[in-house]
Image (cartoon, rainbow, N blue to C red):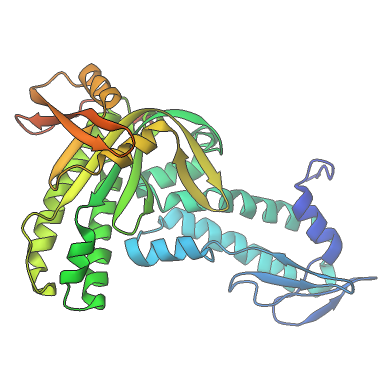
Length: 353
């Protein structure tokens, strides 16, 4: 294989030119005019020393503090295929590095492998925010992956879920640990609901979650999937709160979720192992999550989108919510007469089948 050094990732090339790579457990390797040392490659971050300075080559996929907190809170499962690919890449890098006598000969191959690792690292954090089936497709389809690029504008539904009177709920808890356990278990359930309905988990906000349903990912009926997820989240909270009522000194009945939903064009932000969304629909979904406990409120644009894609029986009710510094705003409640019907599937599921 011939490598065009001019087009090779400059950061990787610079690291390799500076260090000429390392061994796994054997310490210093003399590769001519430079000496380098590799420390604990497979455990995570590799530290590289030279005569003049020190650099870090990040080979870790789970050392980001935010991702670690997500892992402990949400207990997401990495797909077997991803774990296998990551393990095989690290294993081959480790084997090549351990070959002390032929480090220079392996240089071009190491460049390729490290570039592949960085490419996977650039999207690996997304896999914990989507359903495992979609995560598998993410690693295998470049066009699908491009939809998650930083700054891309997409039509999507944004859903903000807020625990109403969360401060009162915290003060009623018998202990801080019990309240933390209550929130942790609840967040796990709500997040799974989002993923099961082909949404994208954004973040845990402290007293709720933010998620989004892009059309490219959730399908043309993204708004319907979001409302189905909202309905299931209300039910999950009610059951969870009742099940853990002994965590609290007083069981306050009018505590529940307020859910806000909006629709429109939103920018994806994909930087530093973070995936989030920015745009007007995000703002108003969050403001509408100030709804009464047990309510889901749609902004006008979300309601218009719903009417276009859902042709089954339902009832729509006008509602009003006060938005600070803006005044009373029109919102809508959707009441489904029967079980929510979803006809279209995300395209990537059709591709897999």
